[in-house]
Amino acid sequence: MDLLILVFVLLVSASSAHEDAFVGVNIGTELSDMPSPTQVVALLKAQQIHHVRLFDTDREMLLALANTGIRVIVSVPNDQLLGIGQSNATAANWVSHNILAHVPATNITSIAVGSEVLTTLPNAASILVSAMEFIHSALVASGLDSQIKVSTPHSSLIIQFSFPPSHAFFNYSWVPVMAPLLKFLQSTGSFFMLNVYPYYNYRQSNGKIALDYALFRPLPPNKEAVDTNTLLHYTNVFDAIVDAAYFSLSSLNVTNIPVVVTESGWPSKGDSSDPDATLDNANTYNSNLIRHVLNTTGTPKHPGIAINTYIYELYNEDLRSGPIFEKNWGLFDANGVPVYSLHLTGSGTLLSNDTTNQTFCVAKEGADRKLVQAALDWACGPGKVDCSPLLQGNPCYEPDTVVAHASYAFDAYYHRMAMAEGTCNFNGVATITTKDPSHRPCIFPGSHGRNVNFINGTLLAPSSNSTTSGCHSEYFYSNIFMSSLIVLWGAAFL
Ligand SMILES: *[C@@H]1O[C@H](CO)[C@@H](O)[C@H](O)[C@H]1NC(C)=O
Ligand SMILES: *[C@@H]1O[C@H](CO)[C@@H](O)[C@H](O)[C@H]1NC(C)=O
Ligand SMILES: *[C@@H]1O[C@H](CO)[C@@H](O)[C@H](O)[C@H]1NC(C)=O
Ligand SMILES: *[C@@H]1O[C@H](CO)[C@@H](O)[C@H](O)[C@H]1NC(C)=O
Ligand SMILES: *[C@@H]1O[C@H](CO)[C@@H](O)[C@H](O)[C@H]1NC(C)=O
Ligand SMILES: *[C@@H]1O[C@H](CO)[C@@H](O)[C@H](O)[C@H]1NC(C)=O
Ligand SMILES: *[C@@H]1O[C@H](CO)[C@@H](O)[C@H](O)[C@H]1NC(C)=O
Ligand SMILES: *[C@@H]1O[C@H](CO)[C@@H](O)[C@H](O)[C@H]1NC(C)=O
Ligand SMILES: *[C@@H]1O[C@H](CO)[C@@H](O)[C@H](O)[C@H]1NC(C)=O
Image 1: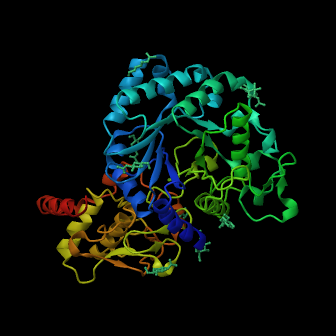
Image 2: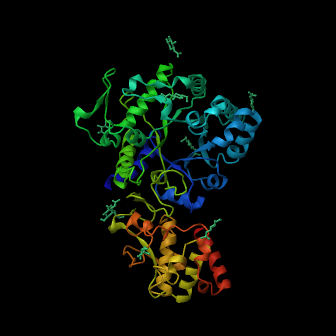
Image 3: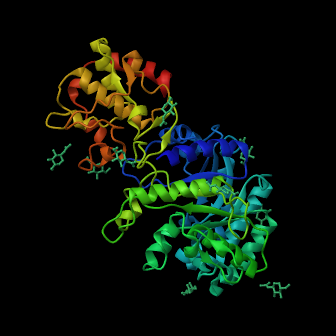
């Protein structure tokens, strides 16, 4: 727990101190209640996350990221790859619509062309390099090629990976693609994007890989893996995979392309066939990974060379297909509540699982009842809080008072906005408190961290259309009064 506080503080200072070592996050959007781009950006800011990767070029998201200082990798989704790889004009058009429309306000630093194309879409492999070249030439034509790099993320499965790393090489079947691809990366000053998942290596090793080795936990010296070729000592799987990539590159005589890890993470939940997808392991892996990256330890082959890494991923994606663990890679749930203890900055320093610094937003005692009612209406309506728990028969109906209901709604809004400054005001009738206002069976958002959201599955995970159905008509007692307040609040924090 303290570790994560430390590393997120480090993350802040390291990213301002040395531009060359950073940790970013991937933002997948397969959530049934995907937060709005504004809410995503509020969370990124509150968490001091300065580097993100998007899996597409969502217009609203890129607009929300404008003028934030956040560096963005955007992606050409695999389903658009063929068109772009087959036509220079299509590529130029794509760049114009998705890149030129957003720079310089949004700091797009690279374009990931496709995702794990060689291993997931082998039919498109033949046009991958032309897609990258076409996009690059459109950037050249716009004078953006020096600030926006073009690359493509690879699965580590393209590496014929058997320990020791010094014996690694790219699967020969991909060399006809890999050779021109590396030439392109070299000649454009780009980097090699690699997805590194020790979780999968560990899971598939049938016990040959020790959990501690996968999680960057200290190993007794006799358990460290030694590459007998190079005599390099490996203390974790991550380094071994990254070095396997370096050795694979050098087997093609390429030694000057930096490696960026576009995805790495550990799932926090799984079914019985994934017993090591646990909160503790996810917390350990990501904490140690962040510390490792920010310390610029490098790898045994290239000590001191930063391996910038994007954690997979910001949110748990409940709509992802596959086993349970595939839905549980996130650092946060849809409400911006950390899945495990992360340090929250924003309005003061907050820590979800640290009750001394845990804050909630509640209605002020003795506040004008009409103003409280109007604020409640706003929260359940335009504020998009799921107020269904307040309905009769649901956990937060009792006590059935305006102040109690408003407190629940205010707190839900406040946590949804990542407790950002100014989001617990509601025209002066709300106040921040460190006292947990939960009362059985009503669990307030932000209470007891992660557990809150798993209470019967749905309490705080509204579907996007549950908002209006969850709002009692009694809350809408005066539309005119309400709309004037909306304008006021709109000015205050929207
Ligand atoms: C955009 O990001 C690049 C790379 O980190 C940085 O050098 C540049 O200063 C940033 N530009 C702005 C306007 O923030
Ligand atoms: C593709 O278009 C760019 C301009 O956007 C041009 O400079 C380049 O020569 C073209 N490349 C090919 C292969 O046609
Ligand atoms: C190498 O790639 C080919 C083509 O995708 C695949 O059939 C083969 O299984 C791969 N080899 C290994 C050892 O992964
Ligand atoms: C790498 O360089 C060596 C020595 O210059 C050469 O013999 C070898 O063919 C090269 N390999 C490739 C894949 O280019
Ligand atoms: C940071 O790196 C140094 C060597 O550069 C090493 O001695 C130290 O243990 C590392 N710290 C952590 C927390 O990994
Ligand atoms: C949060 O605190 C509770 C109670 O102290 C503890 O049981 C739980 O393990 C903590 N969770 C995390 C993720 O640290
Ligand atoms: C709690 O907040 C105070 C004041 O903001 C801060 O000094 C303290 O370090 C925090 N405690 C933890 C455990 O983060
Ligand atoms: C969760 O569901 C169980 C059984 O369906 C029920 O007894 C319990 O009261 C529910 N808890 C809440 C907080 O709704
Ligand atoms: C929400 O909307 C989707 C389609 O937009 C619909 O399939 C679903 O049944 C709705 N859920 C509720 C609870 O109304």
